Length: 367
Image (cartoon, rainbow, N blue to C red; front, side, top):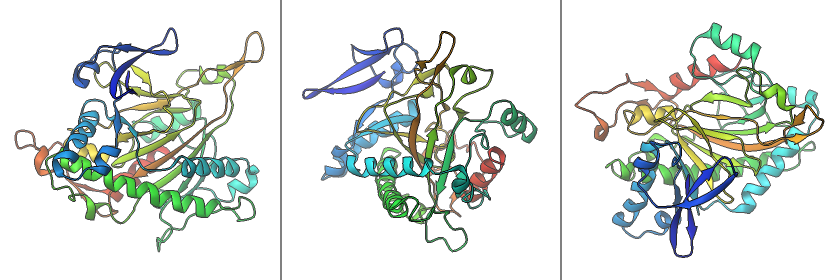
């Protein structure tokens, strides 16, 4: 279920799987809705109200909506976020051009080191999972690897790790487009983290000096067409169930769909249907740790969207593109329980640095 603008007000829409449509229903609180799969919803938040606010009290209203979404669901749709449609369209176009390159050209840019987390990851190389057991992950990868290819892009001025760029002539404008998009997403990340700070009863600027190094990753994803029966084998998915590692993930979807979010209460998966013009944003593991699990890092996956029939016994899925901007704290930031999130004076997690946590998770899931 989601919230949709209608005239000057809001209406609540519920997804009906049998029909494939959303239907209006009576408005209820988010905390009530997520306890039932029939009324589960990802809230739709108008971020222009925060951007245009002239007082802390005005900002706090939007901040509370954002924190409530991350507290109850772990996901929100962000509308009127300030990133233009033309910027998103250009980034998708250059991403598509990159993935159309010959395999040998992409393989020259191969991902090599979890500390760098840069470069091209071919189909089958990654198996995202919540498991931390190396043997189990290897077995999952061999049996049902993620059916996707990606390229990872980090801050371009890093003195230790360099981005793996294609030749300019191969994809004209690719590098400039991605660096502009990287900076644009970082700036939105700062604003959303300021809203989260207010919603957690912290100073609005609390996170500013903890995320200013731009230790982020821009991931371009391509899910090629695949015969449906291959995605219906045991354990197989376009991307397996997982949580993200950092503070926030900004996800830009095309119209194909396939993203599903786990209802934290019932553990059933529900579609995060693409809404034009919005960004799907979810809280990651490090934000959950920072908040002592006040904010949820929710499991999600990518499954097969509706497929086109090609024979009496077989169908094929469409190509799907998405762009994920993984927002992270500074490399050496100490992630420990925020003072406003202590429960009975107890912190659930030991302190960890951003680098320690992310490198460990990447080491487990990509070979």
